[in-house]
Image 1 (cartoon, helix red, strand yellow):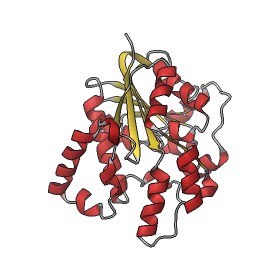
Image 2: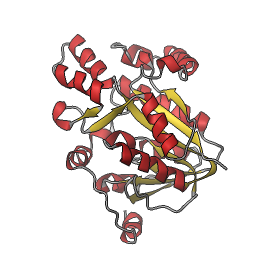
Image 3: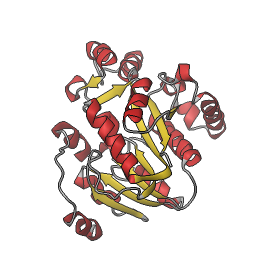
Length: 282
């Protein structure tokens, strides 16, 4: 904690502020267990870990984890031998991440990173893009990631696909649950993209993207022709997912199948999350 506070003391202020409802949601701390408390979260975590381990450009890298929250990804990245710097706009989350071995944690905003040019081999945006509802700000966040990445390094960003809210509504209805997004809001979000905290009671304000939108935002930030990967794929919406994810033998079969279809263009939007990755030009 003391190390983090001393680093924060010298950070320059920027013009951006996190929307109040987003800050309040993350201050509650529920996201700390989101990727472990149910099968959907565990599949998302396992797939993101599998993808990044295959896509990171080497070992012993300098990795910047932007919007890294309490360090769910920073923790295993550091354990893998990478030197990890985490930046997050929520001070309480940064305080938790600062206690992780091998992780340096800073308060900061994805649109104005408190980091030097070309300082990292990989810059990860595992959450910021889906909390920026203005396209200009999403492009700015990707451009900042590009600025901080070394030539030959990568920028990787997770986004939520446009149909995710609607699919969640259908799953809740099929399971007899009344928690979550409502029918009218789910269709509006599928048409327009912006999910408001007032639309539902399980998440906060977010932007849900089409895969092509994300690719064009990367290109506008100077990262042409990015690769895209479906994270959970359509199997992520199976109601009885526990039986697949928590059975070791079946889980490996599921993971191998997802690796086969992860880059199929016709299936990219049929996944709750998408990972977009670009190599920084030399």
